[in-house]
Image 1 (spheres, helix red, strand yellow):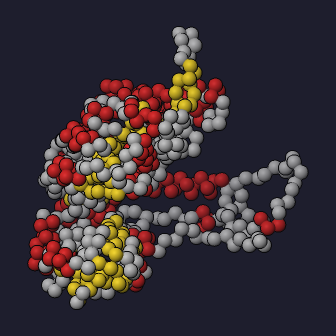
Image 2 (spheres, one colour):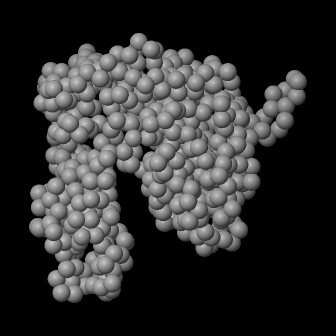
Image 3 (cartoon, rainbow over the protein chains, first blue to last red):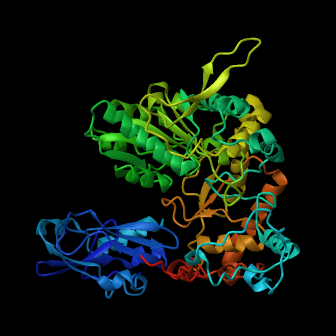
Length: 130
Length: 491
């Protein structure tokens, strides 16, 4: 399982890359492997929307199940990866790279402290395996 | 071998029916409505009959073998149900006939309502909803109507355990409510502390399935319903799993306020491609005025000499009609027949044997398949379809391999709280011999998963087509092979 050390993670399996005041986010390798092949992806927010940490920003569907994607952090949506609505297989093949979902302008940097680092997330995933 | 489509079987000039010369004057269709091309298949009657017989021989049905699809209660459907539904008085009745010409049909609906009230311990029943999820939507709309009638408009949330059927949150969201998910505790019950924390004056209700989708009886059900009631909410019961309780326990006594029943599951009518569903909604007496209608009632009491006059009545504060006419009447006839054939004691035996069969299978399988919530189950149980020492194998591979052993696979990947779930519901209508054959196959497959995993990965092998590409099917949806070229009408 791929868990890049420089990212932060949520309990609902989203990752966050912080660049200055911007958070880039997507879903983790663990999430995509649990869901298996993604067959549908839909955004629930648009550029300019204010999102709240934990709020639903997108829906994923695989051959096994449907799942919500949650905002890992509060702020304003400044970019959306439009490629994903057509090429959602990227979520399976490159979850941390080409399958980024949103760029969010961080409104409350304090919230970053509530996210897990890679070591904690690895442990969290392993616990759920047993 | 695959069966060609009717279009592939078509041969120009073949026909099954010859129309007589019309005995009324011919009239030409308006020019714009006549299609130049209408490529329907051309076949004889015997071509068509053989085609559909071939297809039926490839089908897996409950008349063919055990169908252990968890949460679906695929029990055998007694053929007497079909005989009764085909009685001309029922089969030929029209929903718009004057009520004095369909008193038998109305009497059956009335008596079915009364029977369902007795079975569930509820106060009133509407037979309108077309199936389970439709019953849920109806029930949540009743919750909304109830709060609104009291001027209580601050309730915006419905609580739903994480083991619930996916239709529960869908029904709540469709009714305009916000869904709040409740975790399960280690024994598979609703986490009481989480429930208490979530219950406040914004909670409209809780949707609860008992037994839940793990096949486990909600051990704290009285406490759960009490907590919700104290917060001013209503408790909705998803009756999908009623088969486990028939004649033994009544949802009305557990504190449920609204409940839907799946006549097509619990009361043995064909479903899953075999026929429509029927999802009557039962409520406690104080909610009767909100039920969808019209509902069959006695308009004039009878006497020793004269039968009562049955007719329709709209409840005073009804949420309105939820179905054209009166619901799926043919399903009601079958369910009524099933109940009357069993009687009270027979229904109790149904539940006892459904529970016994599930526990027997669980006892045979728990040593080879991991059961995360392992206690005495009710009508079904959930195992994992995954092993740490067989990393390539997933629940889907187990399910597909079962087809090679001539069994219908169990429900897989649900409930979501069990990873790689296999949800097994044998129902009461399977014999010990059948259960043993199924268990033997499951045990053999678990062994193959460790010794010959490729056998599972490439299954099924004994079917006309092998493993279907589900991703391609989901992504490249082709709903129609031919689009008629309609000529546009001038505006």
